[in-house]
Image (cartoon, rainbow, N blue to C red; front, top):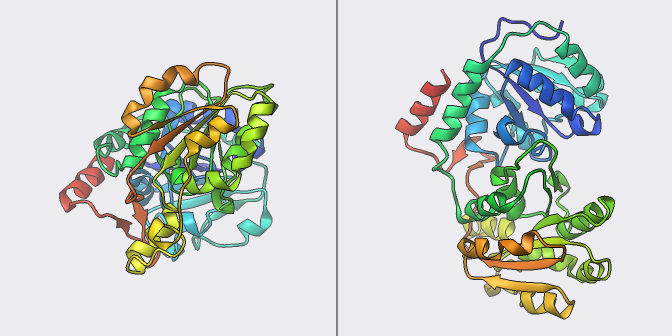
Length: 369
């Protein structure tokens, strides 16, 4: 038996291994049967969407997801490697109140201990979920309701301009879309705030590979794989420039790819580090340090792709018709240069920054207990 009913606040922590094992439907079935809340890794963020979605954990994870992680009493980790971005610099601080059960097909990942008394299952995620489905597990709807209430309570916090852009895009997408995401700030904002309707949509995300420029190639491959299907592509201004020539492929193959450029005119994640840790010495990441951005609208039009530049994400609904036709397009969304990522777990301390007032943290903890 894997699960013991002595736990009151279990969570499922799922990574992309669930998808590679063809076990997403089983995961959904188990989550709906037991109402155990589902948290994800960044690269597995599209495994639990719509009404199953709580959030993703780790360095740039949703605050509520990391707070739930700190309050739960059992983690069932499936296909999630629990690397340093999830478990933190000091794994002894990872989910301090919880026991840990890990399922992974990679014995070398399991060779690392996250917790001293963790239970490990070196098996396929699909077989593991079949076994869980055959066990008599209580319904945890009351605990899940607490997690949803905590998420609702915190929804007004950590909403930067980047999060608002991505939420606006989300609201314009139809059910079960395919979204390709580049690397950079846009990737973190999408992981935090891109909530898909339905269970069959995809968010293709580079994750830990850090391959800037991957967004447009991801979108091209996805469109071709779905017989010239519509794909939405979210990029930053830096990543997009690294494969900008593939606009020719999009036009030549008549691929209905809808490109959103979140354009803050900086290489965001690096410039953020240079701002907070290096006294604004922007080496090749901002205009003052030798980084510049072209006119994306004119470049797209040179390739024969319709394009526009928006002064604000609030104007996105005015272009929603572009998202539903059979043509490629590029929407260049201007943002402020000081668009930072929030929240963030500081590597040195393991604390969430920016911190919230004590009374807010206490309120969330009370909701979860």
